Image (cartoon, rainbow, N blue to C red):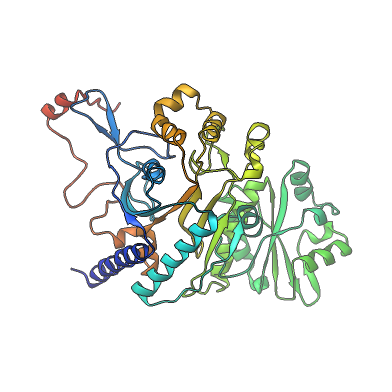
Length: 453
């Protein structure tokens, strides 16, 4: 009954209608796909549903309708959408729930630009019809590599500056061992010019040093820029000419503070990306009521999982950039994907790709992932057979509907825009689910519950 919750659900309703009306006006068909599906690798754990009729076998609840929407394209439904409930058995955060809603879109005979154009129009309609704000597409495009180099992350908040600057070639001419050691190991040295940050006290600098250590950085070097030039415990390790070139490259002026992290590339980017946001907040550089949307493109096709094995960066059905296909055999980690994410104020709200529509290429990508012919046939046989009959070039995108509505309303958690959300431990306060069930029900399913420990 709280007015804020009533308002949130009313805006959610308007968002549903805005999406449906816009996509319907563009010739899309809303088609429902099954909830009981086969378990396939999507990145997170599946919720499994035991089958009473087919004892010992399980359905999975969909993490996305990915394979079904591709089949629809092959079947001749050129424009599909669905506002669909999806399920992932993963640890909860402010922006995650075990069941969530996404806007699912797929189109035939398209490339990246066509998918982006439709998506921008949908977001424009959604903003206008829910909160009365105007967007101005097309949104800027930035490659994954450029995003990481400039902002340290593939989810850049482009409302403010403080971009990362590579200074490895300059500091190599100095004698500061921390920097030289990182470079000798193949690492990076990058910095941020905190405009106006010279006012930070020693305590604040110590706080920022502890802050970057949360992201595995060993420390934070700094140079304070004053009217009489740079001052810092590290300036004695650099010739005056190097300090001048460093200040010039970083655009340093009196009143600024230069911060540096030296380590392996991943740590440097992660630490500085988070430091950038923290500095933006402390210096009041982030315009809270401004909305900046940007596309990040050309992600890596593959990455390493927690065990160090090769894994799809998105999913195994994403098409590689055509000119990179030869690298599948030579250097798969250098292969770029025809993938794209929409990022709003530093939050990824949607992601998609152009799909593989050639069976031979699909089997090759699965082989790179260590999925042999027999396993591929068992898990994806229906898709491979469909590709054999001939598939149109197709691609699509999925948006986190709950997240979009929460951001439109300025809510920090998607729980505030869901009628009956789960708690942080995935419990339903409404009915107490999950709960124990009768022994007879378990017997019918052939399931025995093993006590913990």
